[in-house]
Length: 50
Image 1 (cartoon, rainbow, N blue to C red):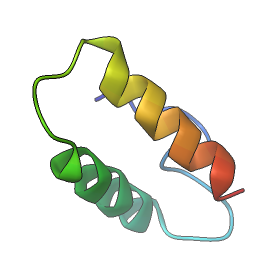
Image 2 (cartoon, one colour):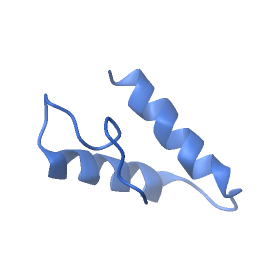
Image 3 (cartoon, rainbow, N blue to C red):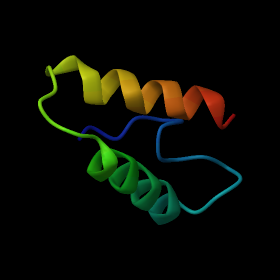
């Protein structure tokens, strides 16, 4: 996973909390997935939590 500003790193929470949240989210996805589905899902989650 590529770390990008705003996905795991935010001013209102520690970096490692964001990493943990992203890892938990990805682990909950069910297979089979296309290569874009995990990325789209992470961005949707990141947009909703801002």
